[in-house]
Image (tube, rainbow, N blue to C red; front, side, top):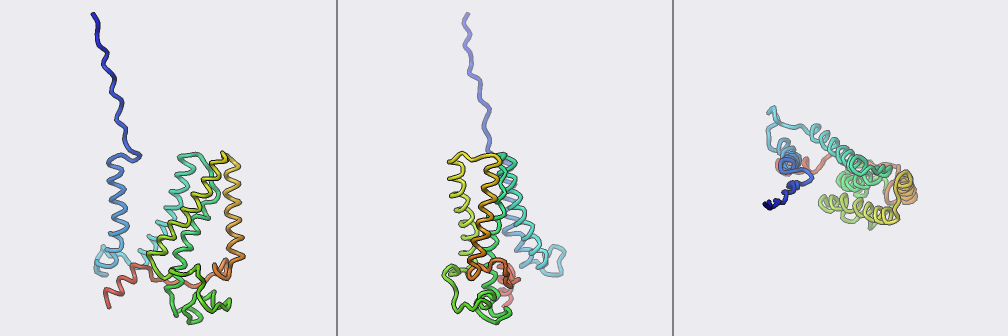
Length: 214
């Protein structure tokens, strides 16, 4: 008597996070993007649920470092690749937002000029072309993501195409960071390098609150 062998059903494949993981991720992003500004802008200051300006600024710093830690976890924890150059990509994104904040300070800087203070100190008379659009929050947010992403894509393409791995990959990423530091040093008339410059303490959330109150 012949018995037919039934094919065994393969286990259903789930996504990287799973259904509940995706829902949780969307909820956390909504809380950060919508909830935190709303608790600062909408909730009255005398409410227990109100977030102060200091709390918003502190949460922003925490989120920035969390992104950096997550990046290290993905490349080192999941792939086993040790990168010593993550500080470069983190710094490029931070500098992009720093450019916007340097423009937002306006004439409240030390030299009372529309130019960032370091440009006035270096006797620049006009804004360099590299800074065009730096007074736009949306444009700078695009650069914060696009510039580090493009650099990582180009570097990763040539590094992995050449089958560089192990300690050699770590050394090359560290060399990339050092090369970028030298580049910023020789372009200090545009980038300020290690000179520093005052920035505005008013983020987009604070500007929206001031416009609402006006």
